[in-house]
Length: 531
Image (cartoon, rainbow, N blue to C red; front, side, top):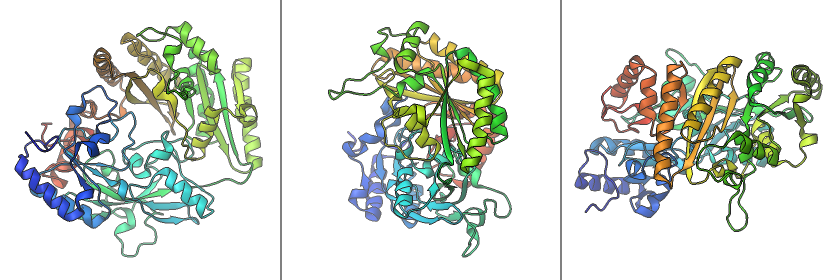
């Protein structure tokens, strides 16, 4: 019987034991863990696969770039794969579990330095273990009027991890990779590279100028397994003057209004009258934000309204909307600038929606919202605030199962409407609810659909997998790419982009990591699996 809970593919136990001894000689006993209790947190998956398929063999906690260089040397020697995480809060996409069984989790949460914050130009340089909350506290401590764009998990997540997965947020800086500048990486051969102008000795523009000279390579290290990122530059917003931030909510009573909602706000978004990555949230997602636990741990969820196992009937959905006073669609956006600019732009925005929808739209500002916790949550997201508020989305159905299906649509009303209808049809077919939000990019929509199910029920596990598989197949057939996915579907999503792109990814992998030691399986790139 093995003394380890899992072993990497193709590695004998005696060789793995030698590798662990060398890792411990480098880092110490406490920073190389193989005991089941220490590895339990990496097994808390929400995808519809058994945790056995994603069980790590060990976890390591480096603190310096030099330690990571030494780690990859040992990994190459013994062919022990390393699954890198920053904080591991990759909710809806696989959490911190590795794509394949037996990988060593290289947990970078111990690298927590905020290396530099430049208040004058609005940027920072951070290590992977720094969270958005850490940055917020730093700004507060040093009295800096700076905002960092945050994703939905906000306080728990890392700017490095979220940017490397090309995540998005809700302020004018919502496209996180677009607003990053300069990377430091350790390659599989131990080389340390700095992208952009970082290779210039004593560079003063590493976090100010993205491109450097020659081929721009930063993009190949996102959603990939070609290097281990150890530092990242992030551009920050200057906070507007008092009275220069104006969040608002518009509620719409009918699902059929989606196309007209998009048709109304997209001209304002393209003209940057609405400058932020605004969001259109459906009734399920919005209502779930109100679901909480009482002092006895009993949760409020959809079962308080509907005891059936299938998807919610329209009548019950309406009951939930009425109970929590949410719209069929809920549009959150904000205006930024001087108070005078905000006042003028609000006339344009409110006028456009009132002209289109009349009394069918309910417009809510901070004055009307008062102490509504969901409005406050969205207000914080759109100003880069890190909230510690429990997000009730995972209480919707109960049972701990969640997969975020994330197709991208061009921001055309008809296209978004078609995606919504198709997704609803497929989810309902398998007995699941359509719970979603559209995050509005520059000319695209990140259509985030949370497939929520009960992991405690084997039949629901099987149905959830089949449902996600059908969503991916049907959406791909309709010409819609999936921008990000969970560890159970990375290979299938990779295939959906065609053999030519996979060939490029494999060519890069063979060149940069011929021993396949860096996160095999990430984004479907795994030299152990044929093209």
